[in-house]
Image (cartoon, rainbow, N blue to C red; front, side, top):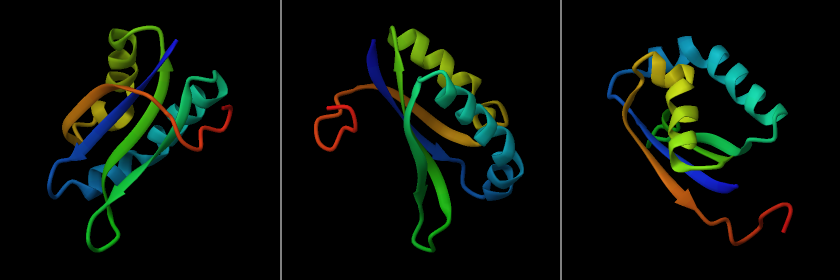
Amino acid sequence: MALFAFVCADKPGHLNVRMDTRPAHVDHLNALNEKGILKMAGPFLDGDGKPNGSLVVVEAETIEAAQAIADADPYAKAGLFASVEVKPFNWVFNKPDA
């Protein structure tokens, strides 16, 4: 198993989509967390402190499996993101189970 980071940027002017979809997104992340797949997650913030993107780190067998997890996110399905990069990630410092 390897770690993968999803670096997601919201489309401009889509805060309403984020807020409307947030309950389903949180349910999705909670389900991943219960399975031990989710390692960390949270929003990027703009200059006003409002969310404008996401960072999600998951554990998966392959980058294709990680991409499938990213694609299943309700935010992605709702068209919130302008871009999603799925990148292999090496958690070096402050890793909880290190």
